[in-house]
Amino acid sequence: MTDLDRMGDGTGRSLVHALATTQVWEPYFQVVRWRERHGEYSLEHDDEYVLAMVNALGGGMDASVLCDALTTDDELRESTFWRIFEVPGTKRVNLAYLDRYRGNAGQGWQASIERLVADGTLDRDRVLDACAGALRLELPAVQHRWFERLRSSLAPNRRRTS
Figure 1 (cartoon, rainbow, N blue to C red):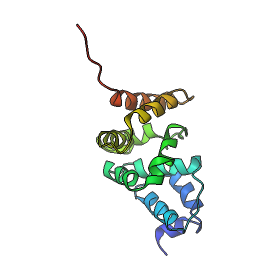
Figure 2: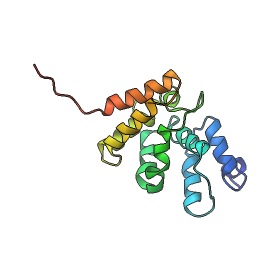
Figure 3: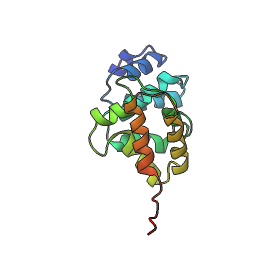
Figure 4: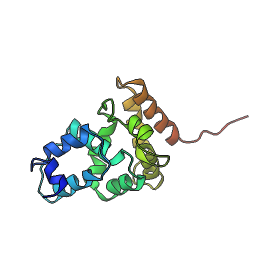
């Protein structure tokens, strides 16, 4: 039995709960996804699942971990990923907190999303629309500012006219 198995209940649900609520410094979410994709777990991709993904993929991990996860997992990229723009985070499990306190420059969610937009993995207009949707939610100011920064970093450059 592995440490990961000790954290879980065999269904993956308690592991998802742990990943959504505690600081995570290991890439356990990839194990959850591997087990899902191989039929060992059947999990609802509910709000807690989204927070587990946000926390375990963005909490101090190198941007390549998150980018690889989204590049190689079509289901995660095309459905669950977009819910990060809809699911409000908790005090310590939210995009702004993770990017500010649990990572270095070039790590985390914003850097990864910018990289995935730049390489064409994520559609820029869809990300901009998702940011606009998130900005309409009632979020704490720090989370609101995170979506504003992401949207601003991806906005097309405007030509200045004299």
